[in-house]
Length: 164
Image 1 (tube, one colour):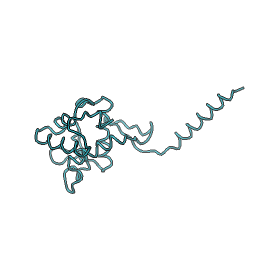
Image 2 (spheres, helix red, strand yellow; image 1 turned 60 degrees about the vertical axis):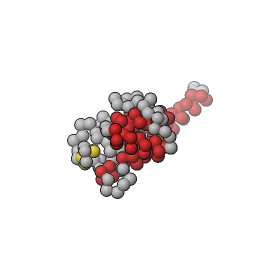
Image 3 (cartoon, rainbow, N blue to C red; image 1 turned 180 degrees about the vertical axis):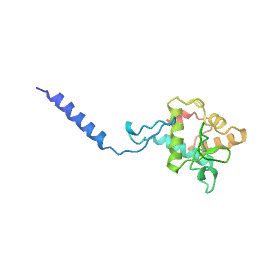
Image 4 (cartoon, helix red, strand yellow; image 1 turned 90 degrees about the horizontal axis):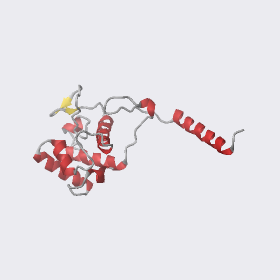
């Protein structure tokens, strides 16, 4: 004979199973190209990470009609390593849709948040990130100034304060 606690746990488990089977589904692909659709549907990124991504998009010129990032559906102007698809400008990866471009940028930022990035750490400042992200001193200064200004923080702000 089941106790009240066991019955409540069973009911909760059944409810969770029903939710899992009827949840909204979408395609989720990791940065390494593994399809995770069967493991949970859409990924929900933190609002602060999305805000930082929009600041990067502004610094990259994504919101300027006709710019390379805008035409490439690539708000972060990402140059995906090993990319075999089309590119624009100086190797900017062209994504099939704006949503795909945003997802790629969010995933890149999640690599930083989860300490899986081989380039960036959460202790990097916006200025240090700019040096690595852009590759030239002039571009880095403008990029850092734009990102920090959009976030209303100094360029010396560590990433953990603006991404997490």
